[in-house]
Amino acid sequence: MPARLLYTGQVVIDLVMALDALPRSGGDVLAHSAAFEAGGGFNVMAAARRSGMPTVYLGRHGNGRFGELARQAMAAEGIEIANPATDVGDTGLSVALIEPSAERSFISYVGAEGGLSAEDLHSVAVRPEDYVFVSGYSLLHEGKVATLLEWLAQLPAKAGVVFDPGPLVDSPEASGMQTVLPMITLWTSNAEEALRFTACQTIDAALDKLAHWLRPEALIVVRDGPDGCWIRQGSAVAQVPGFPVTAIDTNGAGDAHAGVLLAGLASGLSAAQAALRANAAAAIAVTRRGPATAPTAAEVDALVAGSEF
Image 1 (cartoon, helix red, strand yellow):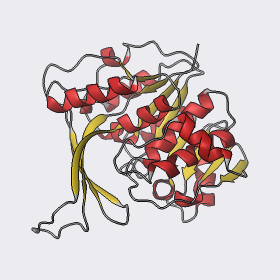
Image 2 (cartoon, rainbow, N blue to C red; image 1 turned 180 degrees about the vertical axis):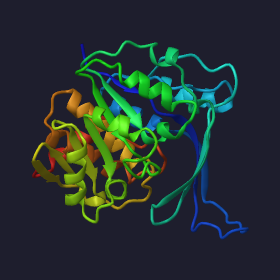
Image 3 (cartoon, helix red, strand yellow; image 1 turned 60 degrees about the vertical axis):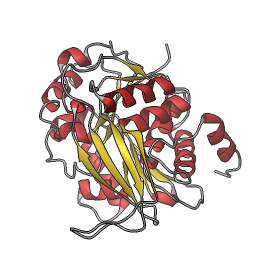
Image 4 (tube, helix red, strand yellow; image 1 turned 135 degrees about the vertical axis):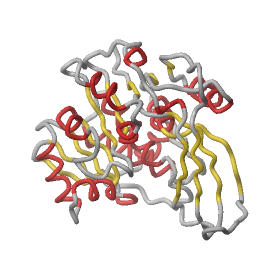
């Protein structure tokens, strides 16, 4: 049976606003555009689905207008929703502020997705070939972390555990990390997150430290912006080149990278081949406005076809 992405993180609704500059404290600015979009974990799942990977959302979703937007977006991408809407509360909201430099800032409110039960997670039987995606944000939710860690410890031995620390899990001493580290089979993050987590000054040093903490066979992928990404498995290290583009919005680019990377690995590609496709997906994503801008598999094919890697 084909490998699936089982996503345990959070789907939220993004209010995306493009503006010239962030306002000062107490100030006000006019945005050039504003739109409600499904975001958070939705971006990773949509990227994987657009590259043909079966995907299941194991997290919670609310019973209000934002929950309905989240469900509509997942249904449109062909993402399976494992659990019904919660009885109380709506899906959370994140305000994403995009500056002309393509840098983004977030203000988030946690909703129904911040909770999780054992029944939620056991609604789908995990197969050995599946990839279970764990977001660092999940470790920060008191209504979720204990249940999630207990469930992860019961996974089939060969199931992949993918971990993305995100911007808020900043050290191996963070909540839940000592439990999660030995389980990780695939680490995916940007360079800033890897350097902060490891307290290192260079990507080489961060890769060394992560390799020391993780299981010997774990694949480590660290995104390096327009320069592509670095991959390490065992003692083998490689830099996989990026694709030169003019970025207009970096929101969701890392998620596009992670989803397409997983789809490539699930289809049998080598780590380097999957990483090249992920780099292409991220490059395309930053040329589009919005959080869920991952390209289709055909679009990735077209960009990779011109690569000399």
